[in-house]
Amino acid sequence: MSLAAMGWKHGVTLLAGPVLFALIQVAMPESLIDPAPRTVLALTAWMAVWWVTEPVPIPVTAFLPMVLLPLTDVMPLDEAAVGYANPVIYMYMGGFILAIAIERWNLHRRIALSIVSRIGNSLRSIVLGVMIASGFLSMWISNAATALMMLPIAVALIAELDERDQFDAGQRDGFARVLLLTVAYSASIGGLATIIGSVPNGIVVAMIPQFFDIQISFLQWMIFALPLSLALLVVLYVYLTQIYAKVPNERLEVNFVAEELAALGPMKPEEKRVLVIFGLTAAAWALRGWLAPFFDLPLNDTIIAVVAAISLFIVPASREKRALLVWEDMRDLPWGLFILWGGGMALAAAFSASDLTGWISLQLEGLDGIGYFWLLLIMVVLMLFLTEIISNTATANMALPITAGLAGAITTGNPLGLMVGVALATTCAFMLPISTPPNAAVFSSGRISIRQMAQAGIAMNVVSAIVITLFVYFLMPLFLPTP
Image 1: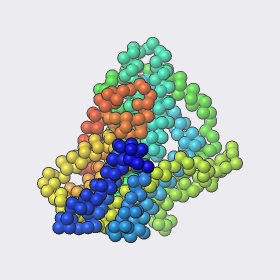
Image 2: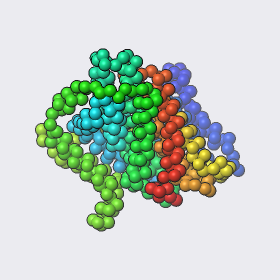
Image 3: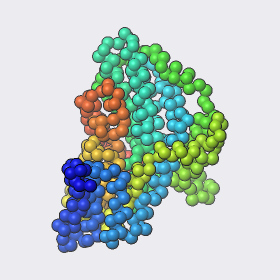
Image 4: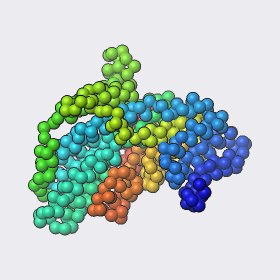
């Protein structure tokens, strides 16, 4: 097919990656950089161009390391392919399978409605209930699934308010915007709290051992990141209800939530069984450090997640002649995401094997004079606004290996903090509908404009940058291991 047939824009972006790869190979002499790290740098540029412009699907770009690293003698195929089987990928896969079971039996809807119904029925209480439900669910299932599940609840609550004369049009419109933004932003912020709650969290936890002799467990991450997530949710609640829009604290008899809960009926056996597996998995992740020595088993977070996934295909459903999950349910598993993740892991391994990380460290030694705190803040702000226009997964895959090189250039502060700060920042994109799936979901409701979202989002971006920087600088060394 000719470039004209494909479209010139598509053709140019398709060629830009390999052309840039070739230019870097030719333009950078061996006196400046050795062949192996130069090749990895050129490969990174090629992947970055394709990830940003998307002339091919993002997961397809992630296959490039498996092809180019062996062909250029940077790494043999068996070493390059290891990244696509990183244990953290399988922990994430187990978490996704658990989330599919929760959604398959409608347990997530019952949890969300129960939380909203118990918080109260004033307008601010409704916002708080939706926030807690969205934040909690996104700790365990994807932020996109959380937003898509919570959006109909929010829209129905808004419609309930629109039918009443209790508030004027300005108050109703303000409440609608606040509730929709609450769904979107809480779904992103809640995912910060766990490794499986946000893809960049899993990426950084998987990459850190490739650059530092450190392993971070599910519990260690949660002890550090849950307070961060809660702090951002508190800021979000105050900002949306008190500053962005003055939400009245008057009570509203909301029939929708009670009616929806009544329609669900009593908890079904399948829901109970999924809830038990979910509870045992979460408890095992939290108690793994104490359970492993007690049972004398090499237990880790990935094994726990895979055991949970297997059990969902074994435990029977009472109403149907099937297990809680069957293989057809795996059509909803994001296979492309796992390939994308593997490509990022392979690229990170190539950074380490070729010593491109060391070369970057030498080039960036002058940045050490900036001071660790300010360098951390700059990286967080840069990543936070970059991910407004680029997928957070692609941003994390591109930025984290380079950040590891930057971390090697500093002589003060915790080098691990730069990578963690970057990973956290790539999840906190609040300004544009294209920034995150939750933003896109609530924008599709038609009740909020891009300008209104940007006005709210830029303030949350600034606050998130400050809060993330402070938590990483002051609290992370207390809860996460240091190099």
